[in-house]
Image: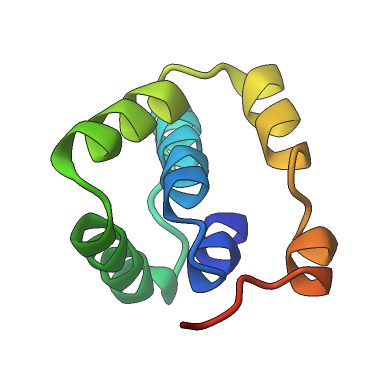
Length: 92
């Protein structure tokens, strides 16, 4: 969810890192993408893919996917949802 909110704020690199960290944690415990989120999850990933270049996309995914639980939480805390809402990225 935090990855989606961050993507909605057009912070695509940060969002992809969060989504990759969540994916890695789900893989560790054998959990699927929560219902009904799979379609929305794929939509967000596609939006991010269109917005980031291949190198940034790969680096962001690798960074997030390589995080352990503590690193993922610390990274998520760098920008909380309330901070994102208080300072939304302006549409151009």
